[in-house]
Length: 564
Ligand SMILES: Cc1ncc(C[n+]2csc(CCOP(=O)(O)OP(=O)(O)O)c2C)c(N)n1
Image 1 (cartoon, rainbow, N blue to C red):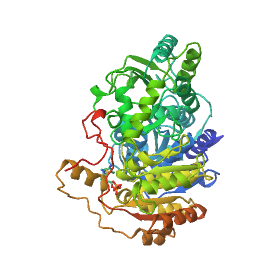
Image 2 (cartoon, rainbow, N blue to C red):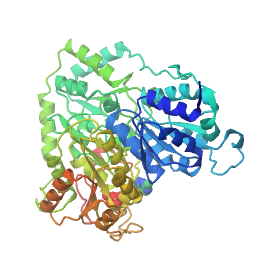
Image 3 (cartoon, helix red, strand yellow):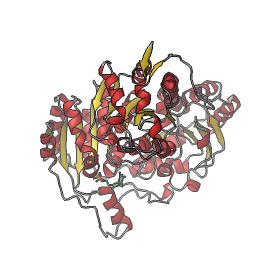
Image 4 (cartoon, rainbow, N blue to C red):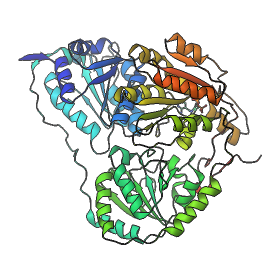
């Protein structure tokens, strides 16, 4: 039977189990939208293509399943770029569909033509341009496999409008077109695992660094088992937050530029470091050559390209985190580990020496007290926090206790302002029964706030807590610390009024004046059927500490504000 390319796309999406798509239509995707009209796939109309990409990304990070977005050719497609780069840097499985001008018009600077394949090649795991409707089933099957296997990442499929209209005899097979790509995880070298077990059992001061790869491979249970078996403390990267419950006694929290000072010192003092599913990002390691300098380093990663890229290691193990951890646990069961009492006592000492000084007055609206209140109100396993970028993100990373995997969603690699709110919408669509809170900055929220319209019209209620310092706070902090307080281009002047802005979209808006009022507002927002924007005014003088200045090593961490 003849069917159109557009119908074949919809059928292919259904074969992949796609239930929801985030998108914005335009001329070059109209045949596809017409086919969606007859399907039960839910389409969520965004207000900016950057947002639909972040929504698909938030959906993917919250659910572990690929998130799908659609944009038209030209400006629709180019508007996806930031969203795709964000997903790429954080290894998130997004499948983006773009319309393209008709095949015979490609290369003629046709209306709304952009070489989107050329543009996104460096920021996607793979991209396809379909040249005939018959290719559709195979390309879609392959795209979903590539996006979600091994190290996940975004895949773009560009579909000329005439291919969507083309009538063809289309066969739906499970055949793939992966060329040189093997979707199966690499075979683990068991001799290396045995060596790792030997070194870890003998270690006096072992430390585990857990990254986002532990979450994407679903290895959180194995991670905890291993840490408890070894009595080894665990530190995480920003992306690894939630890979171990952060209220567990062995969890020291995040390391890096704004990591906990004692967690950074644990890296400095450990004698064996087991890094799992982390790419040793510069924000995590500080100066590469100084990172865990005295330690024997074992690196488990699914992506061979990450081995010895930033930090040179002694023992690389290429493989899926869950599989390697299982093998490691098996090997360690055969061995007796050294006592770790002295090391754990040292960790206790470091913790108490650097534990964030004086507790804030309970009534003060300070970033840390706001986030600690969220720790109290949000139930583990039933809530998700997303963030903007800047101080708000680092305060969240420092103070928010992620107690379950996939419960902390942030733009780690690209540091994309504007990510938090649309990612929260995507996460809420993936997990409608969870409370989703976007902890945001005023600058970040302003970059994507128009999708309040999407949240209201599509019935996706989330809570936005704006830590509103009327400035581009993190830039201000850098100018304060590194540019002699020569403040330029950071003043947002308290505009707009976020309460009125929320109301203009049909959402709720509240401006609490105390921590008590905030608690009340949050409790009401959790019951509310529309999005609530909570505008929390904080001082622009608040700064994020600890901090390792750019280019410095972790042991140079400034635990608190330097005296000037
Ligand atoms: C899209 C984008 N543009 C610029 C930057 C550079 N940048 C990093 S943090 C920051 C300030 C963020 O301000 P705000 O969202 O208000 O958060 P705050 O730091 O005040 O919490 C800027 C401009 C960025 N990360 N992303």
